[in-house]
Image (cartoon, rainbow, N blue to C red; front, top):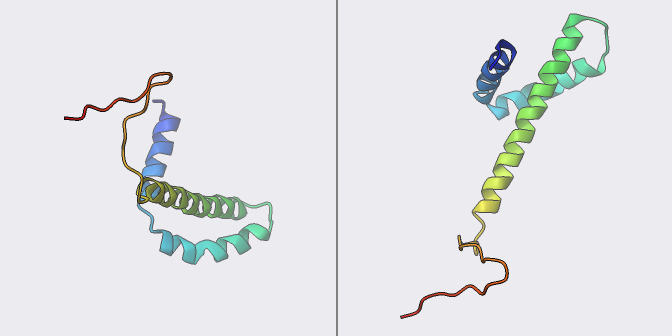
Length: 92
């Protein structure tokens, strides 16, 4: 990995430790800052922070959806049936 990738991975690792509830509290603040455009470094940072908050929320929504999808009742892990051949089960 190059240094840019290393830096991004360190940032991602830090972001993974953020609590979504705390981030949601800041969502409105950074949404407002983003909507008030100014050609300034502060505005650019606000856009990045707002994007990070939205990204964490989206990641958590996808994560929770996938967990629920995999834990739904009635879904059991069955071996895949080969194409063209019937699935046979040994019965004693």
